[in-house]
Image (cartoon, rainbow, N blue to C red):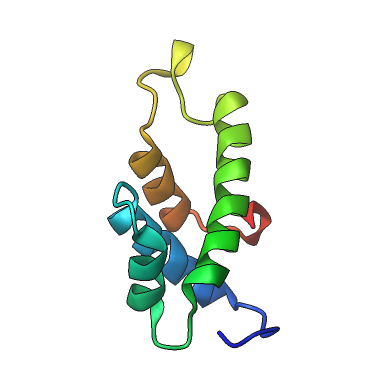
Length: 92
């Protein structure tokens, strides 16, 4: 989106889907922005991704990924997939 235009919920959902697809690719900000549509800039994706990954790390440290008595720990990709299926704006 253009400078100063806030993202909508569906934009964040597009972001999660693209992040999951391009998670382990070095230049993923450009690929994520491209997958989201023409009006998204890689620099904006970079900032949203950084904030999301910080929150993801905190959630993983709190044990939201499973493990222990809950069973198998989720990978980052599985964690993002779960966030896509149970989307919430509180992660951004």
